[in-house]
Image 1 (tube, rainbow, N blue to C red):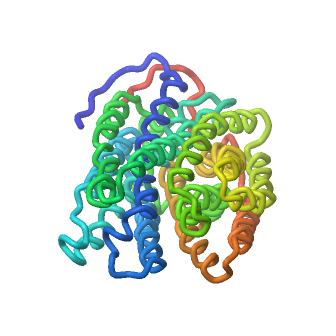
Image 2 (cartoon, one colour):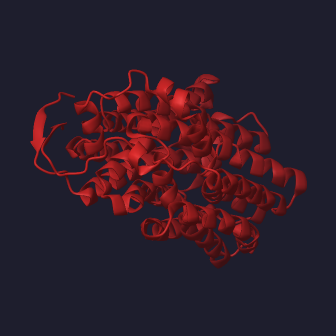
Length: 444
């Protein structure tokens, strides 16, 4: 990528930047979540055929969880260069890395073809996906946040968050379609289609990313030569408390999301005898609704308080845990749909659209990419990666969804404490926010 200097008479439209972030993150999360859908449908039989049904499912979920280990590594890598040389460049590289990892999964030989190398290579591909997402999330959020006016920062930073349900909608739709194939065709080659097709989406995402302009807040940091040489050192020296709170503040929406989008996809067919398509169609509808509820909740936060809405979200997740399982356990399409609509657009949506801006504003501009990425991605290891595994083990041990509901409530309580006690960065400490529409040099 060659850089060329351009002069901007005024910052670009916040809406255009936010929409570009939304489209880019939709593509990235499609790539990321088709692995989750494939995990419970085919990956255990394709890559772990010698294990029992339970062990194979757990092995597949463990492979799924590898990405969460990679995400902080990606967050540190992309965060370092995002704070040093720019947000935009890192977003271009993140979409390329994600595309390579996803395409490689679709082309991998299975266990029957190359033996133990098949699961080894699968883990490597999943690690690359996690590495890419680790840099994607923070960069996309910051591009939207740092282009936004002061009174709409939560609203515009929710657009990358809306890419998550949009990516879920696309990935669930892809697997709902291929699940209609004959089982023999699905297992032999059909499952590869959503992975290979992602190459086209990545090309679109790359084109969009190349057209987006750099963050004006970052440009001021560069113009004043205020970028730290090693952002992570500056972060750990002065912002350790913010880092810890950032890790834990999204625990309520995170556990809700992975129960709904990963665990339920396995739990429904195996424990309730539901067709996989029933769960996927319900997921598509719920995710489609959530694309619109996320910015609505964020707009409320701009008018009132991000912290207040996040605390309300934690309470709602705790109160709604048992009703979600009660509805899902009816084993009917309408019960499953009601459970997922409650879980995603409402319980998850209340907090998730706002937590991005809240986390980012725990840190000053100079270390914001590193701080936002590391806090969120390390937090994912604690609050998200164990969810499918812990929930599966709880069901196997207690034969009741009540144990999983209590697990959800405990996570919501942890998030509530983290948010309630989080430090608030004063407006004057955010450093060099652009206050006028003056001409600045930008790298485009």
